[in-house]
Length: 293
Image (cartoon, rainbow, N blue to C red; front, side, top):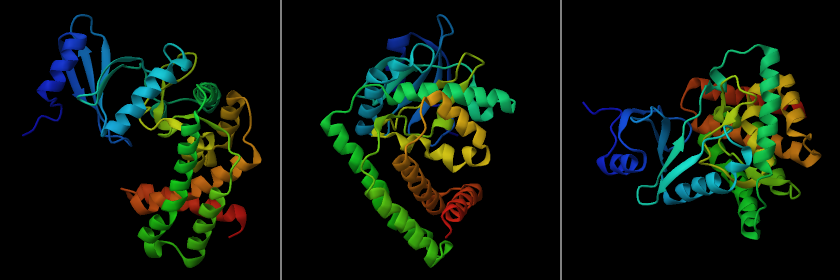
């Protein structure tokens, strides 16, 4: 039987050459990212790290760029620190964050509002980290266009789970997204803010998992929250944007509505569990009711 924590010898040799002998090694369960991640412990001082391998050279380049050029803006302790990289292995070693995922933390409603307010401040700092080059601006525009272009494919994959009226609604959202051209850009997390937040009782939560980080319209970063948690608990949305420092502009609100609808259809098409598809249906029905479809 294969050891689920198995780490290939060349990769382990590189990690131990960088950190020293390792006494603990545990592969973390797969998340929304295709990256492979191991929790490792250094024998000399029991310091904890994460060893992460990217699924492609492009993903490796994107994430290491994020850790070198944007993540330091969040300040010490608010995100993992990049310790070492290996282009040969598409690997990086990161410091491990304390605490638990925010989604698993048991907090009162008042405490959760405080955490979301502080998370808003953290995300604002990330969004303002660096200025996009002309090439990054073109890529940001292309990224949104690709999201819109994928809507037809996802609607086709869903098939009769969508009525004709619903399909027309989804395609209208995609078309509208294409013409929103004054969306503020920033360096986004890209992987779902809530999933990336960890809470340890510190002054504010920490943020991890930057393998989808890039310059893009900042509204993209709010889709997962708008899709689920904020819809059910709008005071958390208010607290987040209090910390973020500004409310979304009119075009950003339109973009977020479009992006949320497209995400729902993608989840209907690709959802791995009935829960995924049920949440997608709820989000789509909510959007339809907001615009009277």
